[in-house]
Length: 290
Image (spheres, rainbow, N blue to C red):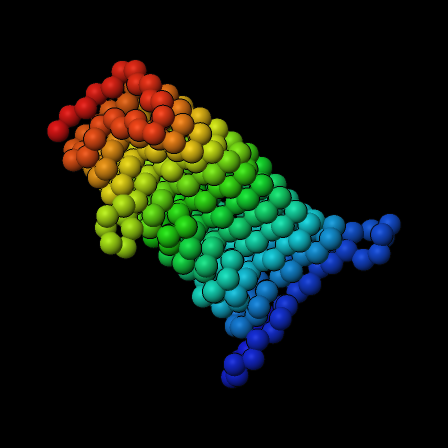
């Protein structure tokens, strides 16, 4: 057990540092099992250079950041993080694998920049900004749950090439998924209850300047648009169930293209289909009720 800041307001900068040394030397590695970091660490574990770490059954209670990774390889399995104010798990230019990871609170649960990311079994609750904020990142995300994320969306994907399978996003502010530039493939997902603080907007899928392929999704209770393609996005949507869409069920604007097939729309007070500002909307096999 690692403890910091007991009885004082002092912050320990780094709990454990794993850093590659001089060029040509063998890269250091760390395996840490069934351990806990408690208290005011700025970064509980920091990985730099070509170093590698494997964390199994590690609990982080209080550190601002659980894992900060600059390059190298990190594998995290059965980890829990809570009580922090920064990003729980952050990687820049590295390869990060998360398996059965839970994050309570934090600004972001996960951020990645110019990285490779693999996720299987992940849960974030009450992230102040977003569950995941991924930029210029490639990878596969499976079995992802994000609840009550802040106004940067449950999943914030920028200039990345990602596939997300088996996701459930509940109670997000502003967006369920917001994807800007790059490519994204979304499979077997549920998005529920997206609303801004004033209750006037909130998009389930917000696709902007991106190539998106979406299959088998349900969007319920988005105060704005359930599926929006905008700013020259090129998106395909198949096998979707949309309900309670406040502004529109399907919308394309600003020279975006949205092609959809097998869409079922229910209980929607707004428009079923909305195409404006040179948006192109193609729909086959649409059912709309109530």
